[in-house]
Image (cartoon, rainbow, N blue to C red; front, side, top):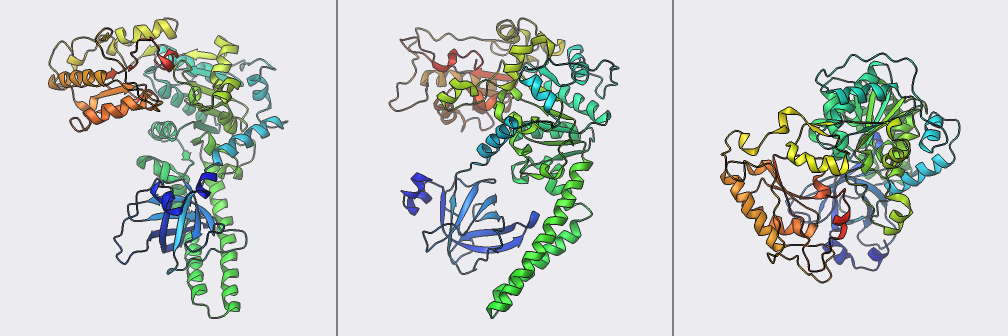
Length: 569
């Protein structure tokens, strides 16, 4: 905010964080009594495009009068952005009804989004003051003041998915039998999500209410998609604009739109919009304030009806899914009693900040954590925060303390040839991984339409560039690293694979440095549009038939920088 105040409006627009000279093209009442306003450039032709900007769904923006430098008229959340318009949802301000003039000129400015930070600090404060709620025993276990325990009698469950292997079955039974805490350790390709879905279905079968979270929307949507296949009664919280297309039907907004109350709610919204139109035409102040009073009363009724419908939808669902921060009590979950959930499941827990896990954890007496603490930890930008313990995930902390007592590791991987698996298994997983017969000896040449060549007949190829003069770039002021020689090498190898019949969409090129990713894209994307080129962080959890790794580092000092962190490799 400080730099925004010292920079001119034109410069802010050039940087993509401000849109100047907009008009309110349309306004209507959306979900939860929010006013939805669509802004377009103030140009004579309706086809005028917005200038380059970095606005996206979920961003918090301030609305200002073009003339004034004063405080914002209101703040809202972007719901949709197209090349020609941006739609913003405004919460009604206390007692005031935002009224925009069709002829007026406005600007939108991106504001700092501190919602996540506020939710994290709120959860930690709640944890500090916690006593006597549903998570009391769980908190004691997670802070080592009491030992984890198991239920005495549990009969083996009848599985929904008969194809689970022995280690997956063991993880399911173990997780259901634990009283406060179970951890499912899933190395790459071991079917962690498949196992979690079975655990959740079994919990639902037992009549439990489950809150299922993960640090990213993609990970949550993955679980929604898998659970939907079993027709489980699920509900996905979160802004519909941030969800994958097929998932949207399970979102709270979609469920409410098809609910019993939907028609009444739609009628009230229409009444609000008509009352709005009347305020515009009102001749005197008295008439205008009468309509504003009417709008206020209608909004109150709308909010009450929507809250009732929301609470009903949440209560009906056996599984509620959200991101860790989306499970915050300042969202729809505030409508549920504090002891509503019996179980919290957190996927990709090893990639989450521990503080974010406490948002859902305070809502149930038991948790099941899943992830792989041998892969990338959460991203911490501040070295000071990392040094003080923020880089240590909850999962890692618990695995270190309790080990076998609370952890079941999945040991059969279904993703890679055993020669590729061998190094990771012996270096990171205590030699416990085995390759499933379906992949153990599988080579690229076994794919349909792929010829047997030198490149497609070997599972693992290591190219040592030492002594070849392929040094990394020395770029002043550049934090990232690049290596043009390796870009050329990767290009030649891709060419050989594609000529042998491997499809470009089945190949990924991965590099630990963003500069190298950019250089690879520049060199390869026009020739192979379907080729995926990503950073290590960006590709984690994904899979392709062939993966080319460019490690980049090559210098006379023998420095490898953050590649010394074995989890990154």
